[in-house]
Length: 351
Image 1 (spheres, rainbow, N blue to C red):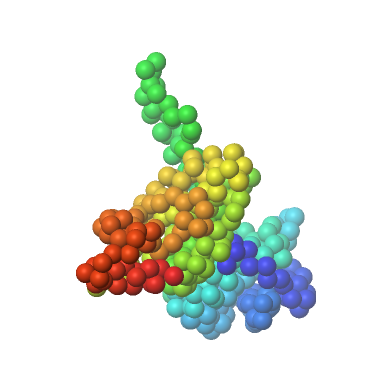
Image 2: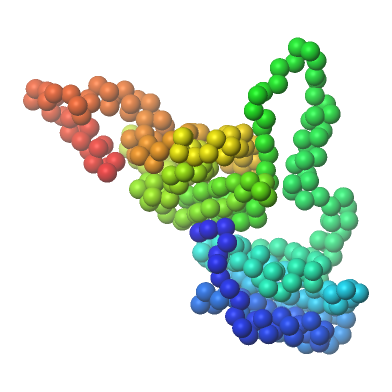
């Protein structure tokens, strides 16, 4: 799935969004049906925001299904009129495809409604978070510390490191600076699903202009052949792959980080950016999401991404056996028939 779903708003939703600006509605529920964004339910305002919130919102929440909930605040902007709270509800119990679909369509929903009208925004993953109490907890948390975006937090860390750096005439600096770009929200969602074994493959790319790590593709069950078809020929990519395989009569569930770089077929500047961001991407995934990679690999071509290659990297003894029993060697005497059968079995599984 790409980092943007491509789903558009229905005509009726655009009309409903226009109607919401006049201030008589308190709650509007928006969902995705048949590849379109639609409005599903609504409630007129009766009393104050606090009095209407739990009474109107909770009955509309479906525990296992994602939706976007617009709740009108009691505050009014001189320029835009009524202010709105947007709660993106993506429960853990929802199906993987539904979670990814709603996460990747959020930016479209916000643009269709109008970004300037949304003055508060929350992301909820359980029905318990869809309460007035949770809303005020969110406000208190925002007020507790100076609000910084993820990008601002990372820049702050960089400035701190620069301020504390020990620089002298003998200090050696690397020729290629290590860059650190923040993760897009769809990347974060995909990694959470990866941790829960709901997704086995994630492909990431870099938006050079926005300086963001974006979600390029993800799959619940991906084969090596299928992943190879999704490797760009002229662009770099980062990959998270859960490689499930059988070795020594045991099932292994290896987590791999792959950096694919097409070499001379890609632009030099792009290769430099991907190379300099690689370590910070790995650190972010390992430290902030608690994933540990069994192997970190670099591949230059889709043809390198094979079962044989991964088995050799994860289990070096396989490489030794393969060298001793190379398929290019002349046929041996019948006495070696047994080992040759084992090598053929490994080759057939690779295909």
